[in-house]
Image (tube, rainbow, N blue to C red; front, top):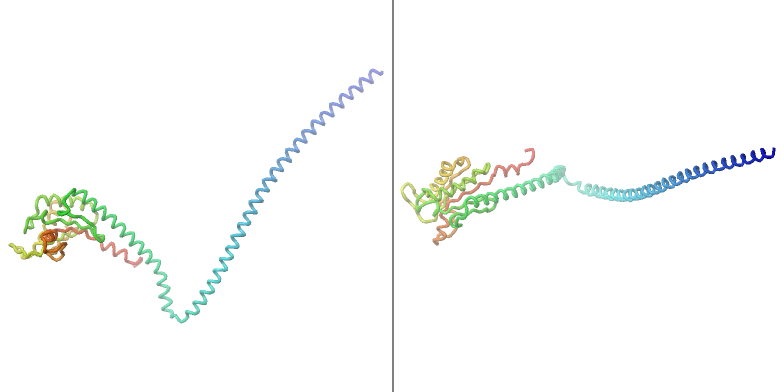
Length: 288
């Protein structure tokens, strides 16, 4: 009987020990879970604190901007009040004068735009002229500047060819060498779209009369038309893009009292004409 009792007590002790161990392990698991929850809560709280600080900073910035806007609003109100007072003091201006002032103010923007457009167009024209000069010099090659000179003056391209190269003395028949040079000039001019040019004949002041040529006027015109005919008939330039003119002795480059001056004055000049119609279109007001 005693032996059974001892067995029962021993079994109860073992069972009690097992139950306590299970409870202990369960408590440990709960504690670990609670610690995890606490850690996550602390992390979330830290993030909220960061967001709070950002919001507080943004609020301060907005308050600062609001203060600046209030100051500006006050400034504008004061200026408007002052402007109204000034207008009241200007009540002696007639309605027509007031309307004229209003239109002038409106036109200021249009004029500024027009000036900008003109400046842009002039800059573009100058660039195109310089490109044309470079193309002409490249096509003609290394010729003596005394025989041919290409330049830009006040936005206009000039090609001066000495009569020594183009013609024999007192003649308007073009030499073979001159015809070759004109061919090189024609090659460049044909590639220019909508270009127009004038061929001018120039002489010195020595009186001249021979056959059908009555004077230097006749000689200068005949030489200009001879160049135009070569450019048209031999090199295919459109006659609609050319003008022939005689200047006689009245636009000299040098003094006619020296041999060098007279030689410089005897020349044929090709003038690349500016497109005046395009220029005047820029001056027209929008909507006219």
